[in-house]
Image (cartoon, rainbow, N blue to C red; front, top):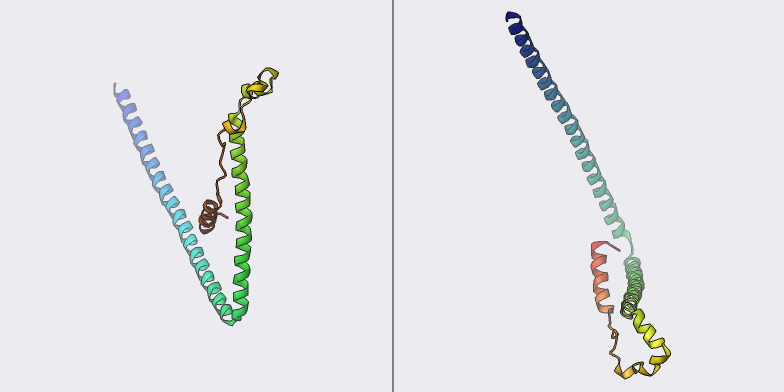
Length: 161
């Protein structure tokens, strides 16, 4: 019985020792990990500061060069940029209009079923083909241009184009 008691005491001591070692290890690991994170954070902050200083230098240089540049050149450059934007805008709107019209045509064609086509084509029903005045307009011409211009301006402001 005494031997069994000694074994239990030894097992408890080993368990407590392992628990202390594990606790110390976790503490050391967390301190080391925090130190690494702090080092990373410090280096990122230093890089951010360096980049902000560089941006400020570039901004100062740009301002200086703009003061030296003749007004006529700046006005011509602004006109060219506006013209390029307008050209890009018209091309983009034309592309979108083609896409929208193509989508409308596809949706109209999807309404026509195989039965409708076969009933029109069959020789027995040729006299039953509806006339043009009986037909409803499928998709009236809708002017999408103002909507697309507004959409273009929104995308341009967001920097998506």
